Amino acid sequence: MKKKEIVYAFIDSQNLNLGVKSQGWNLDFKKFRVFLKNKYNVKKAYLFIGFIPDNSNLYDRLKSEGYVLVFKPVLQSRNYNRKIKIKGNVDAELVLHAMIQYKNYSKAIIVSGDGDFHCLVEFLDSKRKLGKIIAPNKKYSSLLRKFAKYIVNVNLFKKNLEE
Image 1 (spheres, one colour):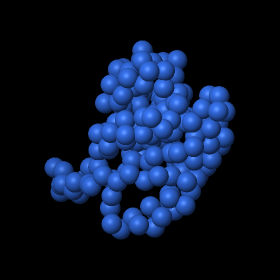
Image 2 (tube, one colour):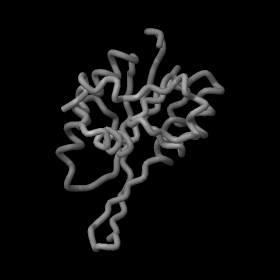
Image 3 (cartoon, helix red, strand yellow):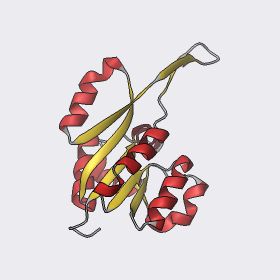
Image 4 (cartoon, one colour):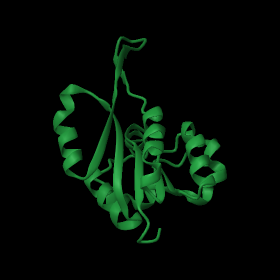
């Protein structure tokens, strides 16, 4: 990405966090924010995350590390063995904010391997505003395959981003 471009990142925090954990490591979000700034010149990094009131310290830390947090209310349910499952799907919020901010950036970086973002990625590509897709794990949605030239696996940067 060229230095004069205004680059925003739109990060599906759950997809990123679970994707990295599935590969056996933990992401240091502070290092990731610095990486986005240094590698891709990201001016604003929107982090889409489920809101749990007990996590206020985490949210404060993420804000202090340079993220713009966008919250989604979470749903709690019990699975078949009565274990509480928390669901905070942020897909719609990410797409909405990418479009709300559309005129404010030259390039967008999407951090997710989720095929639910296919329509957004396709639109950004058609408008020449797609910078990169940072996939949190090796297996990303087949819907994103046609955008392979934009896809970078976060695992390539593990040594610099690991907790």
